[in-house]
Length: 483
Ligand code: ADP
Image (tube, rainbow, N blue to C red; front, side, top):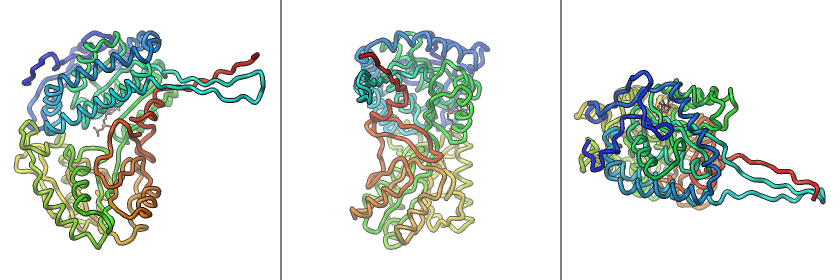
């Protein structure tokens, strides 16, 4: 890797303030999804190393929680500044292991730092309550305290932000963290650990452990010392972790799959809707849990939208993310590519037409052509399953009621989007959509100040904003008598 600061590329785990290998000496190879060549390896740790990390976090807990919020904030801000100082190298590491274009990697790291900045301040405002007591000699006092050791399991699609979004509020309120990054993208996590060590987090407060997802996940969820699990990933794995966490009744936050509807009403500004759809659908090659998965366009504006949308999709330049001209990178692996191709084939077999794309890119490997499917029917698999790839299926609708029913016809409920101008319609549709996030007239609703999260099978809890602190806090009621 061509890095200015070579120390950021670590091939060891960070546990209790030490850089360690796995007990067995085994490692996991990490490949560049653009070239499919190996870029290095990380320790293949299991339950034993995870237990060590949990114990180290627990040893650090009392001192960390007893620091003032301001003392913790100073360290968080130092971490924030170090990340920004090293943003070029961190972006390079991310693009090489994840595939997204350098500009997107930089954007993600920048976004990740906004969570640290936000929570370095917001964690100073963990207020309690004094509630009037019905008895004259008593007082009801409510305080909030850090929940304890946090296990954070993160995915490969946002290797940096998913860590800072969980760790900044946890660390800010006084919880130590044990992070298990995705095996496809561990180097971004380990680079964050290098900078966390430099920022001055005490030993054991910040731990990163790589290796067997099953073993590490089981230890994190079943070890009674861990008080909270925060997971971002598939609904399938989320359900396993929920079951495992029930054995010790842990607090859980789950950011799971999505199946976002993107609705264009007949009063929408079509050019803005096209721009929003490009951002929402093709960012990270369609590999985000809030990507538009089903585009519903009103019959009166269907042809205009389709024509303008396809013209913009044609401009997307697919390639290796390290090349400055690239606007869309590869998919993460062959399995993802096969799923995308299967969804396209199935849609075509059930009546859809390929407006652009529709097969593997001439670059080969994990590259897929940005694809638009028109005339998609509700028989297609893509109507019900998350694709996680650069495929935009477009459906025609004729009434508000019809499209709201179509949009809600899914077990998922993370993000939804719609474009319209009529204020009455905007309120009614926003209230009717069964989603944690409703994005009106924009394709990019994410930022540190918002409560990100889903309803239905898309998850539990919220990340970002002041609500995101609650996920790492317990409420304690103190009954004061004899006054
Ligand atoms: P994706 O489909 O995006 O790869 P996953 O849910 O499979 O999503 O992965 C998200 C994170 O969960 C990754 O860090 C992965 O290693 C981890 N993971 C996968 N299976 C398990 C499991 N059984 N227990 C704990 N973590 C797991």
